[in-house]
Length: 437
Image (cartoon, rainbow, N blue to C red; front, side, top):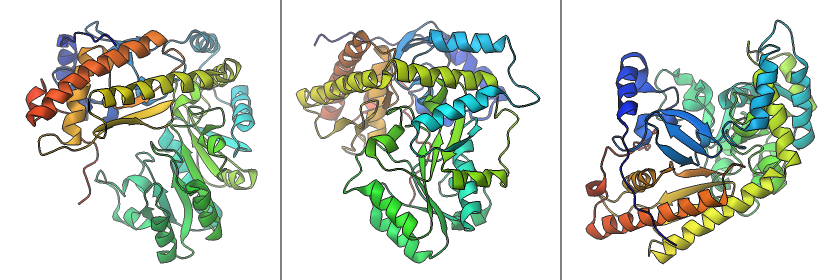
């Protein structure tokens, strides 16, 4: 594979925008994962101006192949013609109205058609809306308050109380949330044994970047139902990403409630709670209501996105291209003698590149930062997670692998010299959540 020369790009205008933001926006960002602390400061772009297909362009005019695609929502590609045209048509009719719009019914019917758990649907705007709605419904349905959770489920009090970002969250929330790790059934069993007849629901991300072991998902479902709790799959990231029926269709384990978002509308703000009719009817009683829950531009985007995914068999393409990238990375790691230090893992449409601690100045975050720096210099906007889109091309993949190969050469030098920091040209990436002591 021919490697590329990488060069540091000018980010002068990005830095100017950042100085303006510091005066008017706390943390300078609306989303922690998009903020400057998540990129090598001084090297990475900070503000993006536009996107087209699988590429984005920053405010300085630099072009990058993008795999983070807005943290996952862009499944077809930026400025995808079918979606843009549908939004424009609806825009000429109106955005949001005094009463309900038929699109609410039509999109709900599509979700019911493709999601195995869905008989009824309610909409929100963010993933946090969906997970919080599902939790409120589960508590109302079971008459219980405590929750067992595995994964990340948004910014609302009920979940964020369990993290190190819990400043401002009332203390009582901490006693209502109990966490367990993926593939660790013993932890979940302990939660149930220590909180008999108190757990309203088990909520988890059914797919992380490791495969479920020993029929884990089915055992979680059986354990929840045995103890009178509901099972909620948080498929905000994976719904319509892994396949038309999500992870539950892929692994054939059907939850009581499903939370959807991200890829649902190719970048427009829309989420959903879906589930069996007997449970979803509780939404007649619980308060779950948004001014923009039936906003028509997002709904028409979802309608056309779901139809395009189905008609074009998009997921076959995502699996094919994602597998090429995943296998290519792991082959390069082996070729460069980095096997066991770095790995690309996960289901092909959504993968994660990881680095393992190799010493005091070679910790995983420093290694990730250095690798990100070199990828960005090569024109690949790297965050660690690769979300494949229908717009990523063979050329994109081959260029990306060439950039990865160049970056690995720099990594080898850093490992050989015992420090990643010495090779960083800017401030390294920071963790959003501190490690719990």
